[in-house]
Length: 198
Image: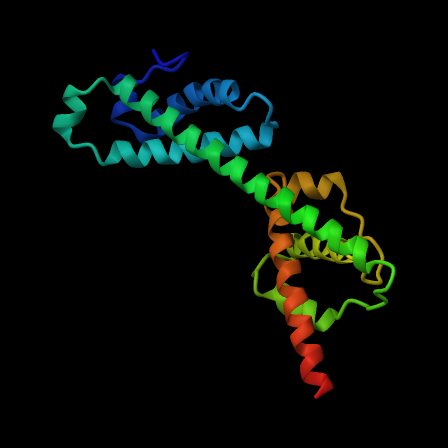
């Protein structure tokens, strides 16, 4: 038994049953590893790890499947994948934290002098490249506008409700991507302004 999961019998011949058992194992295991993370992050890690484990299992030959300790096989690879997930999460958050600090510093320097309005046609060109559906696009745009306002651009802070976040950005992907969009907008708007001044 892998925690409360039974990785044997039908589970080894039926992928749907295998996924069910892996979910039982991983939900318990990942919660222990991601102690301080919210349920959405835990669920993302579980899903990512299941996909990884299934992919690795498919690559085993019939002979390998007959001779390996299958529970040890899944446990070792789950341990490796979750560790990889945690390392990436730490790097990603570190990068966002550094970038946020840079934005705050830049905003503090410019906020008193910058009377510039957001160039909406330019911003829309940047946002359109992300090819999001309407609901995610609207939230994404709000994130970007709010970050630009925090930099000192004239504009109103856009309200993003908990319901919107829970339904369309529970794993913070849009919020994270918005830093990249702000960066692109700053570069593109300066270039466009330079071209107009010629």
